[in-house]
Length: 446
Image 1 (cartoon, rainbow, N blue to C red):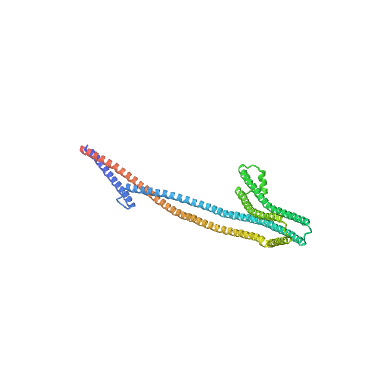
Image 2 (cartoon, rainbow, N blue to C red):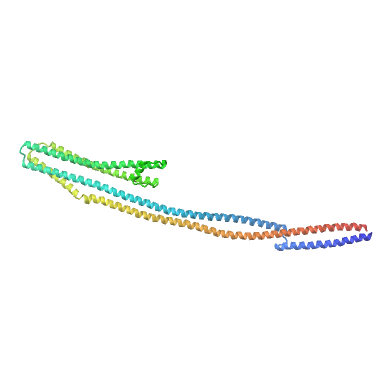
């Protein structure tokens, strides 16, 4: 019986030795694995858990950095797109600004051409009025000549001496009648001159009323869009392009109104001036006629002296009027034509100034455009360079992150292997402990 127990004890001790060797080998293997971890991390004292946690923290930091870089890349790409869109808008605005300046020049040149026409029309009006003044001057000269002829005849008749008081009375009556006819004709001529001015003013005022009605019909048509025969007739009458915008039409019609008002004001001034002159002339004629009719019968010598003085006065008036008539073209007409030349020269200067302004504005627009364009191009280039740097940085983080992930994966594998070794060691330690218990029990039985 004791031999059998001893045999069992020997078998158990043999197993115990085998299991102790297994545990020894497992511990050696575990020590080797742990040594690999320390060598990989250059620190023999670093705990495996700490190493793993540090790598996880580095992984989180790199992933966060990657996210930030991605956002920055997205933001930078959006900025590049925005700047490229800005360049498109800058180009469009640049073209629009240049076109607007061309339109402004075109409108300015149209205004100048219109003003040239107005200047020519005004010159024609002034010449017409000047020729009327010249004709009135000619009429005045003819009247004075007639009066002088009558006066000469009258003096001759006085010199011849009158045959009888009856005959003298008849002659005086005849002369008075002639004077009355001439005076009446002169007054009628003055009134005709006033009427010409008045008719021109009325004509312009009538046109202005039509223009105002024309504008009203244009505006009504703009909002109601109904056929309007009157409006069609207005377009034809004033030769206005129906395809123009409403603002352009209104501007052209306002210009006509302003020009007509200026003409009306000018004609009113000339009308008042001419009327005042005519009133003075008519008053002189009436006063002279009344005065001659109030003259009392005086002696032959005194009458002869008075009539000679009257003739001298008429001759002086005739000379003054004739001198004015002879120099009328060289002074009055030339002044009017010089005004036309000066006005045209001023308008030509306006054209030159408009061209200069266009060149200055276009240079300014080009400078501003070049500055803004270069600024956007530089911003795009800087952001593209920034994208390259960000892309390189992002690629670097990818490499770092892959390395960390590999290390974490390797550490996880090693930790699993250590856990397995510990589990094996524990298993055999438990078996050894049981064997020792069994040996002790058997030893008691010996």
